[in-house]
Length: 445
Image 1 (cartoon, rainbow, N blue to C red):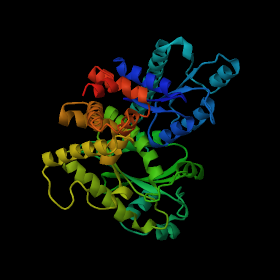
Image 2 (image 1 turned 180 degrees about the vertical axis):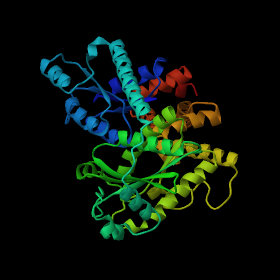
Image 3 (image 1 turned 45 degrees about the horizontal axis):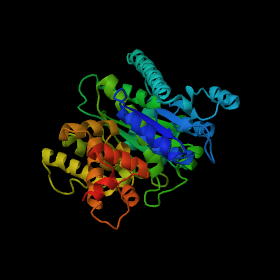
Image 4 (image 1 turned 90 degrees about the vertical axis):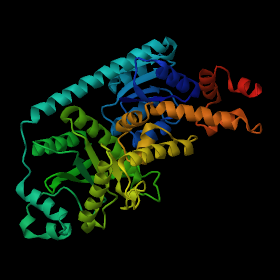
């Protein structure tokens, strides 16, 4: 499933486009929206983007400037511009930035639909090319230098990385990670790894490397012959961009959220190409606590294996968020697999109900239950027989109807409480579901 972001400083245009895309059965898209370039940039920091449909003229930062920021995080994102102006300077600059399309708003919805179809075709073509390259490389294993493999293995077995790097035995090893700067580790576990294990592990490493941006350097190793481990270090520019709105409770959260977007791509490609379900664990900042790596790796692996024992694949465990403790769903009790699955569904429902006025996107829900967003969508439908989006919309409708019983609440206040920042968008949604407008419904009671 591809993710589409629609950006315009006019809410009526954004909401109208969202509705039209949702109603068009030709598309299966995860749709995000933003009413400014700044809001769009915040979304780009948190979730993988495949297609951007953006107004070119916006206050503070225009669409052309926004493209540079979006491409920084998601280089493969396809760009489509909308504008009410046919101006050569804008067209020239858009083409110079390799924008896919430039559409006048007066042309209507069909050219926009066609542009998105074309963009999807290019994404499919690029994905096919990458898969073809990976198939060609699967037969050629590139061995890690012996000393570096030995160094990583020693570190993961509990030896101090600072002591190891100061040893003359490793004096000539080019270790790309600086212990004096922020860094983190990533654990990768392949579910039911049987037969050709070394080839599959090497392929997962290459797929991950293909999606890792140049702003993050890495060192990789294999722990206990079955578990992939990466040490990762972002450059200063990326750190600054992701820590503008620093979370005081989870200061590394911006980096973890960005990394989850990358891992979503990796998990999807491993599933499609290798038929392998890969789960990941992400640490917090390792600066000043390097010698605890082996303990943290064990904790992350335990969290992944605990989920796997309950039948969950393609999970992404945030070690800093879980606090190295047992999963809060399991706590200290032994829970039967079917009971655990229902606990996850209940957790999803609680999150939706408690966050209706905030963010109930697929990405935010997946983050709450440590799932890959695409896997979460399939898992929910498998467990409940319905789409997650259907549950979210039905919950919005149910809560809106309940709130209407309070005559002191204005309809625009109710709209905000159930997640609609536009009263007209709420009215359209309600009328489509109930056959009458919110005002008509309230007056009939």
